[in-house]
Structures are given as C-alpha cells and as structure tokens.
Image (cartoon, rainbow, N blue to C red; front, side, top):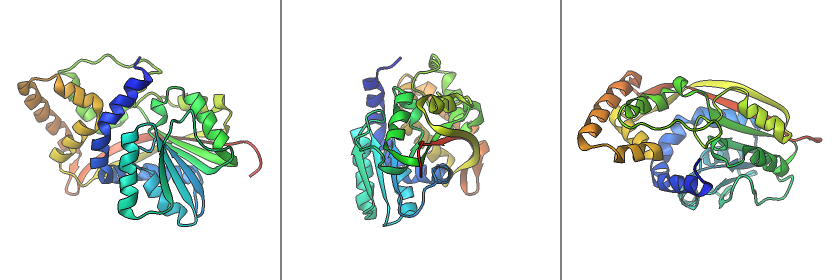
Length: 282
C-alpha cells in the first residue's frame, strides 16, 4: 500500500491539471454538488465545510447557496490544490469562501462549528476514514448533517472505464487492495455506510445517484482532459512507446465516440451519496 506521503505527492502532480479543467469539472459534476447540498440540508446563511476540496469544488458552487450571509471553508492536504482554489476565489471576487491546507483526520476547527460538512470524492483517499468521519461529527453542530459522495462500481461509470480498459491492454496494473486509497474504494453499497455507523453517525443513509456526466468538450479534448487529470493514467502513458500511444489514442477515441453528442460528451454515471447527522438537539 502506498504511504500517505506518496498519495499526497500524486495529488500534488495532478493539481495544475485539476485547476486547468476546473470549469469542465464543475460542469460535469454539478449534479453531485446539488445532491450534497440536498442531503447536507444546506441553505442560506449556513456555515459549511468542504473536505478534500481540491482546487475549490464544490465549495465555490456551494458559496452561491449559502449566500453572503453564510460562509464556506474548503480544506485539502495538498498546498498546490489550495493555491488554485484561492486563485479562483480572487478571480470570482467571492467574500464568503476561504481555503486552508488541512487533513480530514485533524480538522483545525472548534467543536460544533458547522451547519454541514460535505466531501465529493475525498473519503476514498483518507488514511483513516473512520477517524475522518469522527472529526466531521466533532466539528458539526448537534443535529446537523454530513454528506459524502463516492463512485459506484467502475463498470457503471464509463467516464472511467472507457479509457482504463483500453490502457490496461498495454500496461498491466495490479488491482488495489480492498482498503487501499482508490477511486472505487467505497463502490460497494453499504461499505461507507458501515464507516459512518462505526464512527457514531446518527441515522446514516445511502442513496444511489444516477445522472449524466455532461461536458461541452469534443472527444479529442475530453481524452486530453482524462489523460492529464489522472496521475495513474499519466504514469501509464509514460510507460508506452510512441507506437503504443498512437494505438491507445486510436482505440480510446473509438471507445469514447459512443458517448459523443451534438452538444459534447455525455456519460451515464452512478455515485453513492452517504449521509447522516450528529447526535444531539438541533
């Protein structure tokens, strides 16, 4: 299993590309941000914590939900991600958002601070998900909710497998262990729900969110986005010869074209939204 330092190094290398494609990512994952708002019961005037915010999403989107009366804080353990998020905040002139370098299992906030805690595709990479959820509960106000989004099975998400299946024909990778940091660590229904129960979350629930991942990008530009955003794919590309890369590109474009429309790319997607509350009076 990779060390925490190795995982952070991988994400540091990805930070410039996540910032580069921030608007595309916001567009593609907007339904997930909306689901987190709904299940986290986020509204006007709330104070919200976004964990593993990367270069600022969904925190920047949620800023519009809480309004000027509210506040959202985004944290990430990768300084390069937070730098990108701060640049976005300055660019958009937002005054109700702030970003800090911090880890999920050591949150630098007093108890009972937030009206909601959310995380999109973060918990899969936490060194200790149970400790992280306990920290989320600690900083939540009594009766308030946390909401987490994780990928369902890879085969239900062609956003991932359309390219990975092609790449795996040329570069073999050992599958990760069941608890290794990986995008599909909590793909099995009930697995993350069990983590929330173990951490002491009240009335935890899980629901399947089915939605289209939509992007105005062309097939060629989408392929470039996927190859750049993923550190695993970038590593595999480096292992290919020029001839192999040309063949991977040809096959990947053929695979992706089935999801191309006159408005850009559209992939069926499935994500699990797992949520629960902190005990105590509201």
